[in-house]
Amino acid sequence: MSIPVIAIDGPSASGKGTIAAIVAQRLGFHYLDSGAIYRVTAYAALQNKIDLADEPALVELAGRLDLRFDGAEVYLDGRPVGDAIRTEEAGRAASTIAVLPRLREALLARQRAFRQAPGLATDGRDMGTVVFPDAQVKVFLTASAEERANRRYKQLIEKGFCANFAQILQDLQERDARDAARSAAPLQHAPDAVLIDTTGMTIEAVVQAVLDLYSQAP
Ligand code: C5P
Image (cartoon, rainbow, N blue to C red):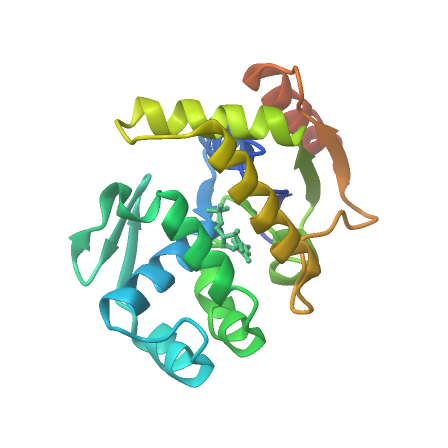
């Protein structure tokens, strides 16, 4: 039997990161926030003054990035990047480089390396479609754009960032449109993924729904 994977995909701020992290904790699984890999790659590119459209330079950068994950913290060259990759600007930069197919390919092995016993819970845009197509559980998590913008707004305020609801809603819709329209691993509800619309659901109810799917998985 292959090492189990619970793959949770969905649009920005759908709560997939929160849910995947809790599910991982409950099952004693490893956790991969694949968006953080795109965010930190874009962050490193900006620091190295690499154009976000320069695919060969980004592929080369991806090959030599010194990345380490420890819980929710990401270390780049041994230093914690903290919330610098959690801003809306970092999200935009991540989704700009995420359209590049050769860069996505260059980041595949890093993501697959997280599949270790006893199992992995992960979230992103293409976890169930491209990175772990044989995942035992595939979920497509969504919520209305307003609810997602509201969640992101609260998250940013709690972290002490300035936030503007209308701007967040617009950014989120633009990012979703770019993620869904790109030809390389677009954000999509795969036919074999279970759709969970979390609008109005509590975190615990969503976690339970995912755990139920896992316990029923063949
Ligand atoms: O999930 P998060 O908002 O942190 O992801 C940031 C961006 O990284 C997304 O908007 C998307 O463009 C990209 N991404 C991706 N594939 C993934 C995870 C994230 O293209 N598996």
